[in-house]
Length: 148
Image (cartoon, rainbow, N blue to C red; front, side, top):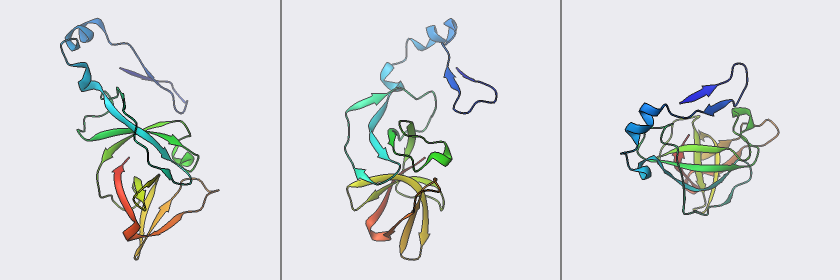
């Protein structure tokens, strides 16, 4: 169960489950409540993609089957209230809608979290921080690994 404080941003608290629900859920396999914590994602200059063998229990927040978690490194998405150190739940997909926040794979080895826009034969990866410039890359050098 969740509690959100009135008039406070980023104020979601996880509450203990009532005894009746907790007893019912004991029979469910604990691994069904874990998601892979794949690694960290840059919200600034792209960083090398490195996978980690960790998991994080977040299935209460999502029912999608193909979801993974990334920890944000950087400030480029701060205007979306995605801050350095935050965790983001990402639905695994290789396509995204115009303007959607995506995990972009650059040059086959670097990843970044940005809004995706098509600009002719190029892709514009737009940060949500007025102090930062967009990343422009040829469409052939940019892939989508997930959408937020």
